[in-house]
Amino acid sequence: MLRFLLERSINPLLLIQPLEYSALSVRQMADRARKRRNVKNRRSHRSYAYPGPRLLAVALCGLWLAGPGSASASDISIVPIGLSLTPSKPTDLITLHNAGSGAVSMQLSAFQWDETPDGKTKLTPTDDVVFFPPIVTVGPKEDRIVRVGAMVPFGFTEKAYRLIAEELPPPRFEPPAPGAPQQVVTKVVVLTRISMPIFLSPPSAAHQESIDGLAVQNGRVVFQLKNAGNSHVLSGGARITGWTAGNKALFSTAGAVSGYLLAGQPLQGRVELPNPPCNELQKIAVEVPITEPFGDYDLRTSMLRAETPVSPVNCGPERGSRAAANGP
Image 1 (cartoon, one colour):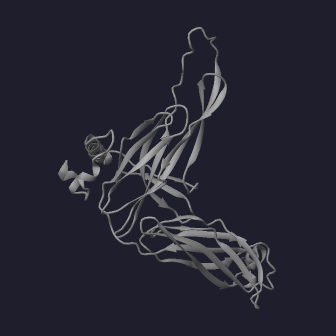
Image 2 (image 1 turned 135 degrees about the vertical axis):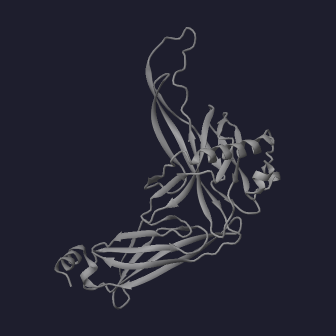
Image 3 (image 1 turned 90 degrees about the vertical axis):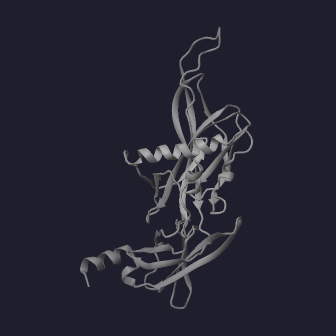
């Protein structure tokens, strides 16, 4: 087992679980990863692609037959909201806190995380990141600790993953108390699903973001955010401004391009022009705020800016469609 961990650049001493956990957590994590690798070639991994949300925390609803007619939801959270593992610290701890009045069971799964150019999140099951325990029951007003560790070598480009914590449904039937009247009613149970980013950081971060391919096509501003660096950044909403020949602002509108911009993965932006006076519009400028993590806890914010001249042919959708139909 020691050789198994050292081959993957994991310090076995870092896997010793404090508090109520012992070295058993090391064996559990290693055995679980080994078993899953043995069956990986006999199964087909499914990839999940969906449009969002891109940031942390979503909730799912379901119907369940239970006691008196009512609705219930758990009050569970994870701290911290994300992890960045490094070659010098390939494992870390997360804490599940239950602020509710009943016990909550959560099932944990790890996924490789990619973003498509049109902003959809793609998650693929992976063994690159492991955790112990995989199923956690948190009592009311209690905390439970989960250890997360990297099982692959660190590279010069950051690797992105998602840890999904899904609440398990409660028992289907709870027998009534002795002497209580028997009745059949419905109960709505809100099951919590939390998505937490995990990054395998390179030894040193290099940031290089840009706005490429800015153009106006059929009354729509199109551009591409590119991250040529080796670490993720956070992009804010785009601001589109139209200018006259005398540098007078005709309009300013916000776009919906925001969220994580992963290393080496572009993000396409499309924003409708707000019916500008095409005979006056001469150029379009795009500004996107970028937040770069650096160090352990610090953030640095900068502004990306690009501009392009606008032809009246492409200013509005009708003009652009007519020009396309007539050809050059």
